[in-house]
Image 1: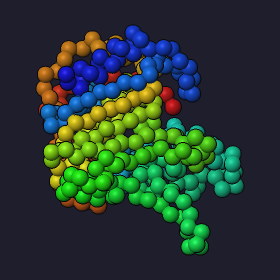
Image 2: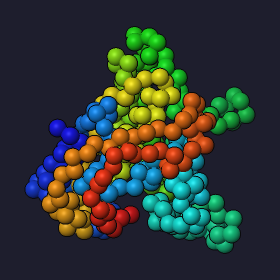
Image 3: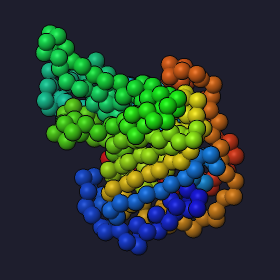
Length: 313
């Protein structure tokens, strides 16, 4: 079964079985508990054709997170957006900023020197995960770069399949403090995709990602492109082929104001062509992070048109 078929079947399941639930955005969702989808990346790139998706946006956001940056200007650069333009993170930033202003009006009220930083979100957790303070070293803060450690460990497992890290190739975006008590205080938004894990098997890299909460119409197609590209990137950096991409969702939902749009894509004829991702040239992580979303090309992509829907935030 193709990824797109699995995705559309999931949409149908939620429309039939979803329980109406109020949510933090005030929009309301039809939700199910638990869902999975799976695809083989060697057979094609899982970008929807039932509606058009601009791959520059999820791939640009991926590069932004891999860079460790958490500010809107660098996100715009990776997504090839104009300076000062609206982003998927802009509304959450404004809420975060309002909280910071109320906490420290002297520092934040003018906005002149405000860096549009979103705090302890994905990039910081991935590249500078706070792992404590060494009191014997003059109270030095200690951080851990999860992503470079992951790359090193994937390479080690490639050489030695019995390596102890073989089932520990995991990165987490979820921080038990920052993303609960610290919401809108230390970070603009708690991580929705909480972690991912890689498995190396027979020269292929397989990747599983998990989401605590997933907007199926807008979010899931975006997240799938994001993690499919990540698997391709890691495979290239580590000298492997791509394998399977597996998704686990917990609260899997369609927003109440997306029902019409979901029915629209369900009514569209299937596209036969299979898209393929073409990676740009890079050999190292540093070279990768000099690129932007536009440097990645999706060939043979012939989708139906865009379907607009409001983002709940």
